[in-house]
Length: 306
Image 1 (cartoon, rainbow, N blue to C red):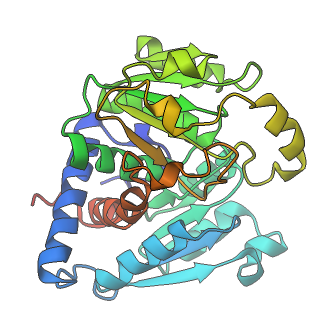
Image 2: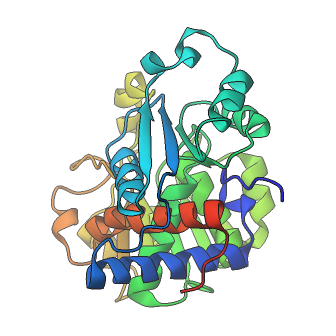
């Protein structure tokens, strides 16, 4: 059987993705009830290659492997020959001889695809400049836990047309919900990704209009990693795009707010928004662990029905 990778949400079918969401919820409930007694990964190793820093990604994957009875191996550019110019494909072939799966957090999505093409073990995208699919598993899991099926509902993305926005677009396609993207002019997502979503996605430039009757509102920092020198210009361009309690008041009565974190209070969100009961970002962050457990289980063991 061909090796399965998870580079974007499009690598799995809608049915497989729905299974992962339900499986993640089941794994989470089992952990709460019985503790980390389900350990299917004895003697399995996940290599974690980090070219970008992280809190949630490293802790969630490392904890997932530990609780599943396996081992996670942290590799920074200083720890591998990638940092000294070894071809990506060569590293992929070497690691595939030694580990059971590889998680990569990097800049170039094309570089990730090159790695996966040469790897005989599953490769997971833990963030690139173009996509962040693992975060969307946690986000849809959180939405599902709190509100049931997301099919036919309406989510609103406010902010830059970045890797998170691209993954929300793919999520709208795969989970069959409506997505309104609200960004300043000049910060739209990639046109090819937008076009592929068809009528599931609407592009707007007025946050007050975008959030009306929305079931979910989400955002991200205005300047992502590697864009710090653009901070001042982006703050000016994104003026008026802050998500606040007053903005959420225009959405549905049972709206929830998500943020992939870290958040910059007083910039993309108001100072006190994360204290609002509609903000469920801590549950969302915790669900990275459970959703990624379901993903690792699926890639290494196949579909396990709870």
